[in-house]
Length: 186
Image (cartoon, rainbow, N blue to C red; front, side, top):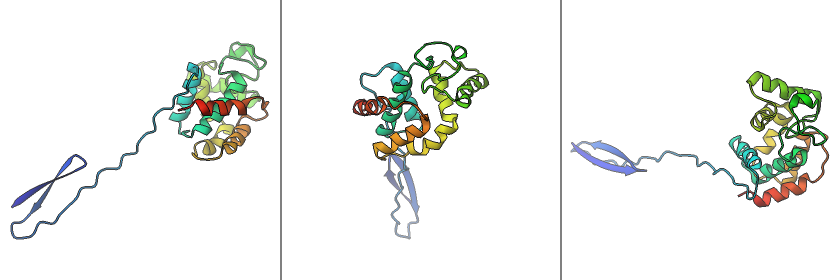
């Protein structure tokens, strides 16, 4: 019996053939490995902005425009201050009553939803991480998540999804902020 050693994708494959039959060439297929996109970097961003960007990336929002739109919305709503109450006062969640946190959860179902989520998970509602995790559980977010997780859409599509997610928020400079972030995310 003869043995022929083949290599493919750094794996040795032994093929055995009898001494009377001609060897049949065999090839091994290299396993397909999905290449992960590197975590994006936001040039000249605060640690809170980078934390949100990394969180978005880790939760399948890979398109830079989608990331930029979400960052722009959060900047407009809270300037990335997770302990901010509507009107700009920094305070504990329990001292606010409405319009709290990163996206200014205002409607009672959203405001109290944040508090309930924090209690159920043993976290603080003032925490940036808690608010990001809560965001993913919200009905409003789940309705638009398929848009944000689809890469390659026009910027206006992401902007429209953001408006449906945030609700009746003041437009303000959020679109300008989104385009600024788009130029700084690498």
